[in-house]
Amino acid sequence: MVFVGGMPRSGSTLFDLMVGQLPDHCDVGELFYLWQAGPVRNQLCACGQPFAECPFWTAVGEHAFGGWSQVDAREVLALQRRVDATARLPLRWFGRLLPRHQRDVQRYLDVTVALYRAVSAVSGADVVVDSTKRPSTATLLVGDPRIRLRLGHIVRDPRGVLNSWSREVALPDNAGPRSYLKRRSMQQIVRRWVTVNTMIGRLGRRVPSVLVRYEDLVSEPRAAMESVLALTGRTAGEGDLDFLTPEGLRTGGSHAATGGRVRLRTGPMPLRLDEAWRRELPRWKQRVTVLVCGRLMRRYGYR
Image (cartoon, rainbow, N blue to C red):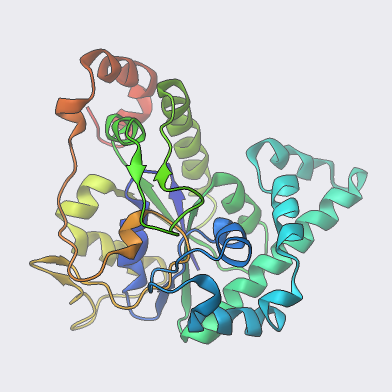
């Protein structure tokens, strides 16, 4: 599987959709949020249908659990809160001293692996693409021998990420828990940009990984997709990248159950570099962001 890791609003949904168009790849969106968005809230799948009416996710639930009604979604959400958070990761080091926590981790991974296997079986794809992004989820997956994890690390200039989080973004009806994506404070975003990318970067030393900058993804999408294919020892054959057209990205039947609003678009999707931060983000915020994130920015080629 390919796990897309990085900071939200870094182009991860676009990256997820692109990778999902590769041969034998299937994108599912941010699987971490599936339980809330799907069984609990019945939000829209990228195919345009509510989760409960989507044939793909209905088949996945049947294959994984004998139907979504056979698994307690709220129990899984409770498991997530107990094990899939950065603050909870150190508990794994105590091993036998915390047997209940170890059981929770195992139960959570069992459910997650069952989902990955069901997605693969229903889609016929060898590679499941999960754009959850969370370092805690990736850390748990790294330790499971049942998963052949590959890591796609997506990064974006933190000034662009901050500017995106400074906006209140409207969502289509039933595409999320609310009608808009909330703003976040500058302090929270610049801190998380450093911590999230640092954690994902360290995990990239333990499993095969590729680093893709949002700016390069938009300007050189074919090179980015070739680097992803190389993660599983593949090369692009004739026609394999035809979904990248002069008009932009041509999507083909994604069933991403969660993720950014981009997943709900239909028709060719123009690939335009969003650098609105250069004119919209106040100069003082740009300077503070560089001051806080500068060292890591330079590692990724940002100035």
